Image (cartoon, rainbow, N blue to C red; front, side, top):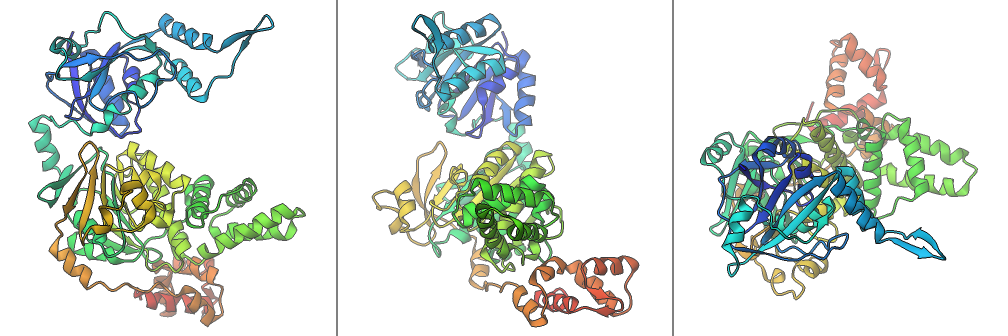
Length: 601
């Protein structure tokens, strides 16, 4: 039997065994002996398997059949489900897949464990949730697996290793298991990172076309990033420790062929303009209306602001009111008005209280021009400068809208690359951020995050392939990373405790890009647009001004005032209440002042 071997980069949440089963193979092997995660299956199923994993955003490489190190099999108790931490990191599973009667036999065996006789009557006992999931995996995949877990051990048998490499199964095994059980056996095995052996032609191709790049941050540290791999990165530490400069050093090295979207709350990453990045200001050049994501997407954004920024739970009644308002609205201002109408008309006290609380949380978002209008996601290397946004809540809402828009585009195959979330603490550890970041890994989108405290950074952002921890005295970070406080509080500028998946952690002094360093030293933060102050000066609604303000509106206004407006300009200005007949309105005057403040007219 001809055996196909693959080296694989596998995000830790991916389902390896279930994709192998879906490929139609009757046997397979998954192992890690220090070279990363490797897979083997019969040649006849290899093509189908490669198509499946590529469709999920993995990268797999054909590799020459390896010589496996000595190994020994170990017993697994026949229990459903298998304990997730059972398998060692250096080990694997060789397995046989059976369908039909074998699957029914295992299904019956699980069911029999939860049958009992009470007063002469056969009753079914409730199954624990994990057992139900294991049982369901049998039914969903229509298959069961005879698994033979093994561990690599130099004192053990080379004979077994040679047979396993040819997918020859032992004569005696530990029993039949569900697909979910095999996933659990592989949970720790696949943590070793990518298989290092790649064909030389493939290595040359990825470098030639910019699909892979490496950044040397020190003699002992080079971070490698490749398309279709897990390139996630976390930088965490106190302000002024070199975190931002290291991040810009990494970003400056990204090839021109990559999509990179930097969410920059302070504007300090504008220095990347010297390295091929386009700097676009939120609310001036970039507009993303959460309602363009659909009511469900807009709900995720608002709920994320409430949960992540305000650290409040979205109660069922608040969620219901918000969903109803978003369902019939085109933008946040319309949703706000609908909730206000409910507050006035409702006869239920609990509903009025929920509506009033929701209005308080929505109000700071209404004066943010970046949350109105419609723009496509920028492509190429782009820094989105959010310093022009007045309120911190609106910055959080805009960042969540961008993340959701990236996810929606990635699902359709329209966007892949890297999203950088600076000051990720603003987003909090909310459910929507964790869900989106978890899903993005499946679609070849990696998230780089920088923040100050692990307590405020979403869990899925902290579970990064590369983790760099800078000097800090934050108790929440120390409790997780340095419980004794012996390392992080003593680090100097641009020193970091480096954790890399599959490698030993170490403390390293990092090299910095000198051009980035000089540019950062000259950086002066810009002031946010004073939209509310301008609106008050002209006696207009700040909400109407936020809806009306844009470069396009200002250019149409200037043409109108000079007598060169087209019919399209006039219709556009009428829609935004920026003219009354031949006269400009107070709103248009406020819009033009804001335009001058932004430096676009």
